[in-house]
Image 1 (cartoon, rainbow, N blue to C red):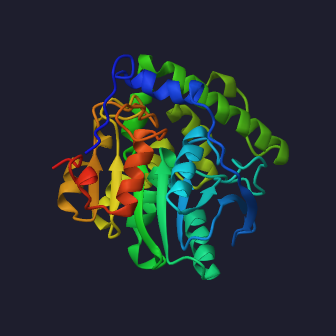
Image 2 (cartoon, rainbow, N blue to C red):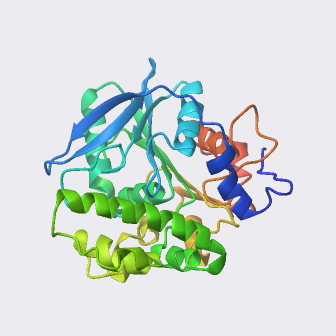
Image 3 (cartoon, rainbow, N blue to C red):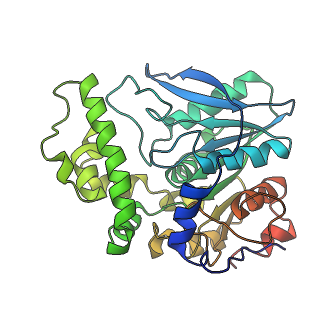
Length: 328
């Protein structure tokens, strides 16, 4: 068994969160770009890393990330060394070019993932597809698996969701704490810049007055995300898009990995009861790991602990390395 062990200073959730983002060398994974035209006249950009295998891992990044984010590349490299092909999916407007529609993507936007999986199924190349999501992308994966299990392509086999804010309202509260101000400022700055860029494509559609004064996700989502995507307000968006309400209907073997000291997550983002009541759902809660961090010793080679554990689960959900870490 390889549990996540982290000596000082990596016992801190903030150090775990910031260190990989700032200091981790960017893993070298060559990609081939594909643009998938979606059924609503828009597009998503997909980055492939392929060999000769018949198993594929689809990786979804977090809020304002992309396929070249270090955590995505690290997971892609781990999968490729296990003989798996990788498809890193960029959410709309995250692949380097703004999408065509006024709408973009959000924490509950599962439509594009479904169309990507239908495309992969139609290729006829892969015997199985596994899903790996980070943060916002992890919420998308879990919601997709539980909202309508009957429509999921049969080739979808297993899934891992890492650092998942499965209760979006609770996660918003957690990020609103003073100790999380650095993360809030960073993410809001990225979102503001994207809305300003988007407004140039659609003059007059967005009211930018006072946009620099927005202080938290509730203000931003009330002003932009909710009306842009057909929600009444931020609370309506969070409550309808949170994946926790769909966990009891997940049928594919799925593992949630949320660090107990993740500064992005509140107490409602740890679905212990749902995992205990659904044989298809496993929950792993290492004491440390931060948000999309999981830097630790005791892991073979160069892998981060999250990458090693994900590969173990995708290989065999019942293996001792996984089962000895699962919350009972």
